Length: 595
Image 1: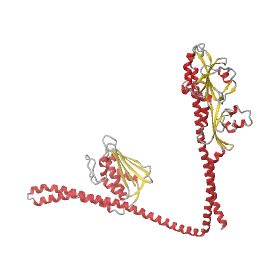
Image 2: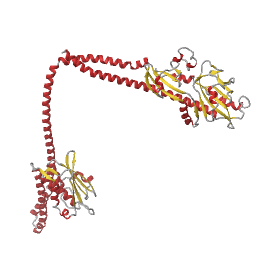
Image 3: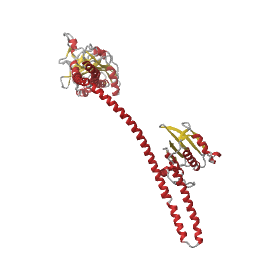
Image 4: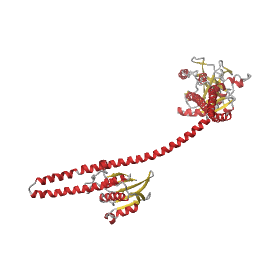
């Protein structure tokens, strides 16, 4: 018993364990993917933020390069009035920390600087000929802009306190004669922007690093660009340097390293700022050796918090599953014999039900067929009732009236005049009696002889009965590719073809080569016969309801009784066949018979 118990338990639990592992891995993958998407959106948002910021800096720097300055420009002397409006202009830009003009020797000849959040004030001129950004900027040509890396501002070679992260935009300036007279240098305050970058929507860590993976700013450190002032301290390189191998693989992506989920995207200032210039229609040639990488880190503790519920759910579910499966396995083992007997009995009952169902289906099929035949027979009886009660009433009434008139009339001449009328009524009654006899013959034929008929031979015999087909004035075209043999009443099929061929000949159009086409098809595993002519056609909008009714005629200029299509439909329905019609005046008629 216990062997069976553990076997059943293993069989039940193993697939469940595999399934839960798969689902757990899938949930983990989905959670990782969700985290990646969130972090990617955050990285992308910050990249766009930096992109827009650099757009603004390039545009602002380009503006000062485009100003036409006076010849022998002396902003502190004779050209002070020229520069005054611009000073008011730069005071409105709170992110300007310094605004300077430097001559071709690297010496400042105009300097405005901001003290705290106050207005720009004139500063002491300095020699900047040894600074890297000045040396690179002095070689700039018209239309070029140099954008420095983010750096801490230095005054007289010493970092300014408190520390000021700045990004410098530099461009050449020219006088009204187009002569280069120096460069314009704008120090943009970066503290506000770096603080905005550090503000996190999620709890992950943020880093902005340069091409050497030095940390420019991060929410993990209180000091921006700390690597520049802490290189001489022990452990500073680890604190202000992001030593992650995955960041060197490509320009963007996500990976797991050191237990953290890293998401990053690189930003090349030179490439992006060229696109920025196109947006402002200034097309600057931007020169920059700065490349930044925006990094988000979902650190191990946070990653564990995000994924921890998956492991808890896995353990709890499996514990409950094992308890439930132990109960199920024990129940299965203890009731195995009883269930086997039950299944045998159930199988026997199922077999019996299947047999009863098959017999019921056969019976239902027969009943359905009988109902269909009764429905057809009821419709036929209605037509017969109409034929007898409606069509026979008028001539019988007329005959009674004429006979009464003859009885009352004493004048022999008048009696003689009434006799031809009586003869006409008698002929009408005889003709109607013949129609009734033919229809009753269809209704009374309970046992109709069914035999295999070759349709091609049958049509060939019938068309010889019509002089129009024999003389060639009316063509009979056979397209019997789908089938040629049909099991049907030979008498009824001959009558149907005779009537339809007779109508096609009778209602042909003048001025066209008249024909009728007999075509066979197989549709939904049933044999179908199409009879299509190019005759005068019928207006079905007016006559569709009376198409197969007694004594209904649709062409007054052609003689007929209106009995043919009625007989055709009655004979076909007697053998469960169906006929439908499609027609258009002036084009022809198509009959479809489904056997």
